[in-house]
Image (spheres, rainbow over the protein chains, first blue to last red):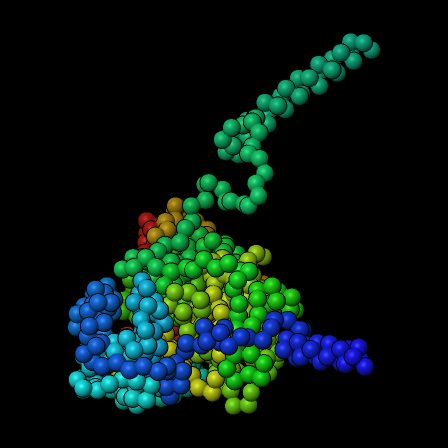
Length: 183
Length: 403
């Protein structure tokens, strides 16, 4: 009886293992929670994926001076790194200035990009609250949020970016005999 | 009899000597550095001749880890780009990745989140596909003016390789994509963890997870050990050093698909998710910076490609666009791959303005720069595929030109 149970147990365990691998080829193994956490840093425009924590404009100024200003300038005016501020109203001109304030459609993208790619030479250095704070500071420099606003997982996705409706679908082909009408 | 035998030996001896002298003389004609001496021994990994000097050109960048290097198209022959000359575009340097520790995690809206090693992926049925990768910003300098002095610097962010890997649709069937999923968020393992949103339809259609390039492992600069390949789509979306594919019900509006790689139109709106690279061609000989030694017969040649399939036709003008004639297309013409075109041409010592114009299998004709600008203005930065004119001067020099 014991032996019989053991055989059943072995069969069950085997079945579970097979189920866990890919069904057709039986390769790989189930992704661990740690692996999914490690690679799952992407933030959706609806805010899903944003972690706990929060940051103020004032705190963001301090982090920005310490970590960001050497490339982007103390006020986000740009240096080695791109200009982060200004440019609103220039997109239709001969010299458009595409910045967070004038061009970026979602504040969540700002959080996602700072978190994954900044500071340029030490990406991943900032803690979530520091990322919220730097995002708050840059949004404030652009006149998008108030000095007293606090950014967190709830407030950040609700920020209305000035160029939120500035993007259209790809209409190509847009030249020649089979051209679609541009949007 | 005896005399005659001797004389025959003498003749043979003289003949051999004469032949030896002849070989030595011929070796000199062939350009051997040390005639009559042994060459170098065999080696484990090949190198090109020290006389071959074609190299990538790297555009000046404020930070050496970002930027791009351009393929020397003017030196290319045939339709494949050597891996060592493939164009590069990086956003935070080239990571060094141990393939035994690298994993691809497929997660999000799937029934069975899966972690695959490179060895796991190599166990699966493989496919190879010869195709072009072209940076979305290739020829971007052409929007404003004709700025690149040669074909490398103006059109060189494009290369063609044979890529080997597995079809992404097969992997997605293995993990079981849940109803409602419509996007795949791809992420690389480089320092900035480059991220792009890919429509699920493309992932299920012809996307590959590649581990091979031109018969060997991917080069580190091309995504070693794993790269997402999206035939016909802009280079940036072909995420290198791929370590994550997340199935979602929305695009993630990543920095590199909103702030960058979107195309600003004259009305201030920007086109988003402009992945496809449309039909394009360029004459690589004669092209800017080259010199024809004098009047006579030459073969005009160049490369054509389309993100929408095969190249059906390439026309060439030698009179600045007044008249066009069909070039010969080298077979096989593969979808999304380089197609080499040729046309014999007699340079009569008078100025000639030359260009090529490709038509792909959908009937799409490569537009002129003016046609593009009429619709898109000059600030869209990406996806320039206009015809490219070179001026052959009376003295045989070739320069960039605006017609």
